Image (cartoon, rainbow, N blue to C red):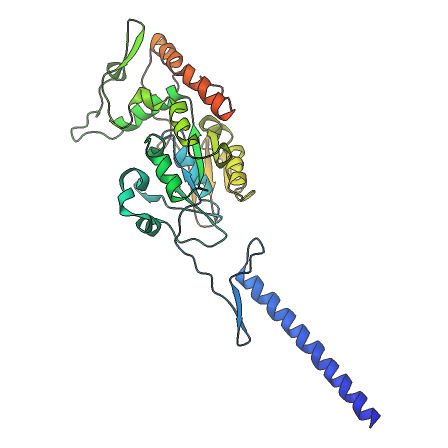
Length: 334
């Protein structure tokens, strides 16, 4: 009798070990296939002995906004970030890059309409909207805060004189049907009279050339609603010369350190430009996408423009505690 009892114990012990081992390898294989990031397994469920993931990509409010400044490298920034699966960006590529402008022009459509325009994202991804015109509209910071108080704000800023001439060249690159430039000569728009700068034409009424370079005015509007800790300011010049350094600042800020590496962003010596590479695509900047010829500025006009923006640059440094080292633009292509 004792022998039979002992034999039964051994059988049950072996069965128990077998069950434990089976469960271990089952759980291990499932969790590996689920590919849970950041050890988040809240979406893994067990029902009737089966393990499955209920998480599907869903549309939600973005975690961060790239709000400007236009012509300082915002397009390049999201192109870099888009090489990583850690980020989902709503900008649509269709010939030229389009922006949603919800907080500018469609706020009356409501939050659900806005969410419906966002890309589906997993719980581990950071959702981003890029819309450079958000920077200038004084109504936008309050609307963003009303919508999501913990929104992270990203700004790419560059020498305001460089930005001014880049904007001019950008607008003139879209020729009229007869092949002519849509804008008059730069010296007819920005003039120096009796030692003072005047702006005679507003190609974009909501974004006058001279006013849009006063970054401190617009940053102050954002700081009324968002603390400095929720904002990051990237150098547009450094984004050109050392992009990975600037991108790492953004990925750290967004809690995704190391998600963009030198495998994604590298300098192509043959082309003389940086390339962006992801698992599915590769794209390199070249002369067709960068290096538009800027208008010639007289030394007097260039100096006056630099002096015009200098007090606003100084105020910006006081607001955010960062010196960008401007002026850095001296009439070259950019």
